[in-house]
Amino acid sequence: MERNPWFTSMPRAQREALLGAAELIHVRRGAMVFRQGDPIHAAGGGFYGLLAGTIKISSLRQDGREAILAVLEPGNWFGEITLIDGSPRTHDATALETLDLLVVPPDAFAQQMRDVVFANAMAAMLAARVRMLYGLTEDATLRSLRARVAHRLLVMARGDATQSVQLRRTLMLPQEALAMMLGVTRQTLSKELNALAGEGVIALGYGRIELLSLDALQALVSTG
Image (cartoon, rainbow, N blue to C red; front, side, top):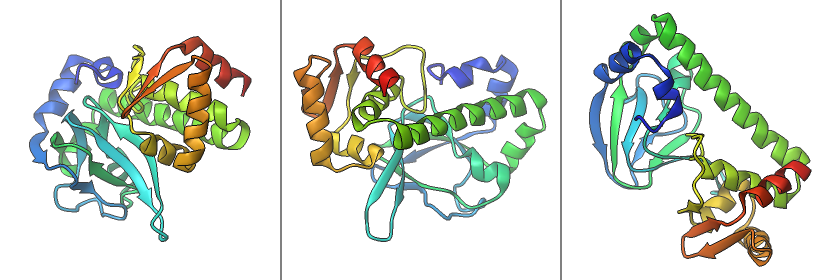
């Protein structure tokens, strides 16, 4: 959990209280942590902290098309929206690998929220996610596809939802998953990635993307 900027920003007392309220569970690969529409008190529900493995946050349309909103990595906490507003889960959460997962039950989460320091930390988490969503909306409405691809690669370099201050240059990410994040076909994304590779901005490998020039990616985002 020390990898996550949000978690480490809290005072030690709140971090220890959160961990102390959590139960460790194991989730097999391919299993659903929760489904879109699950109620607040669904079995095994709560506020989650990811210790090991990766999770896909996605939505499935009636025609079978899937949109991937985020890929969560170890250190991330998630699932707070339903616990705060009492409404059903907004998306599916699927284990891409075997997971070690901390679960803070709804009642224990409500108890933590009575602490003003923790409540303020949760407000900061939600504010960061709103900023990210605004950025994605701006991408979809104002930026070219090339700039959208560049922006998403930079977001993934910071751990997607983690948004670490440290950027990594190797993304272990299938192109199909990136296409689902951007809402484009695999073929359309491949064209854009190959163009970036031809310009020496990235290098492509099996299931991975190497970011060769972060400055060039940022310039694409800035010019739109």
